[in-house]
Image (cartoon, rainbow, N blue to C red; front, side, top):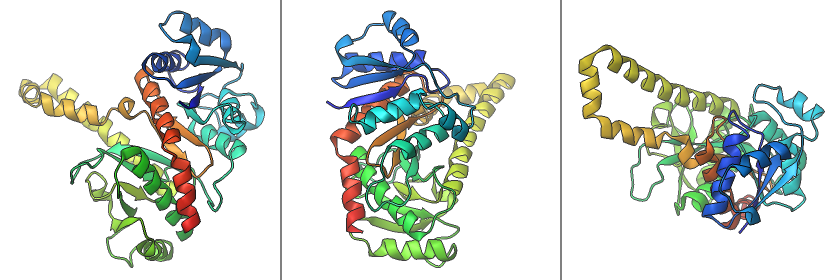
Length: 337
């Protein structure tokens, strides 16, 4: 089983929930875990939990990067921050992948500072998974969207590489033999979106082994038309935050209506099973996290509010990605390109 480095101090609920998640992993699996953070705090939490000490070690560091800190400044001045120490462990071969729920910008910079890009890859991409409808048997309930923040602007070659990386990840992690890959655009026609998007469209049409279905529009994101959705980081980040915001607004409106009107409360009770299914689908703890793709090593980025269950699942995803050779498949796809 692979060894996973975990940023014990990263996230809104760290270190308590992170350590609890690692403790659960040690009881449920054979995954070896290295908790990186303040040893006294981490050990004190472990002492109150059931765990397998043979599968957990602690790498001490007193520094950490807060969620609200400026990533560039923090990475420059806190060279022994937990996220950076964890990345060095992976780079040095003492672990095979990294999990953090901490500062996203710092996580991207930690990878850029300590990991090498896969040969031929020009830019790494931060991916995210989100729930949507499904249209065919065996389709994953989660779509993969990239890039959502590691880049600002991209050219056609970058978008094509993102498509190949996302395709490889979906094949290995979601076990979908031929994921549907699409570009986000302002229309479905090949000529839409300007030179970068039209050039990327034409390139993707010619690449073997990629099930490219063309362009999709914003109203298609919640449908099962595509399994891997590709865009530049600025647009992807806006899309991701919009999806998260809409889910929160819908939940808040339903709760407010139920408190203020008995008819709404009765209606929601009748729809309880449907809302339960929706809640399960949108529960980020269930899928743990999403990867930063393009480096020789993998980082799984969990939601900042991740609880123990989310951390447990993120570690399992990281271990699965290592076992299934995600980075090797990406390297092979880029080499073919």
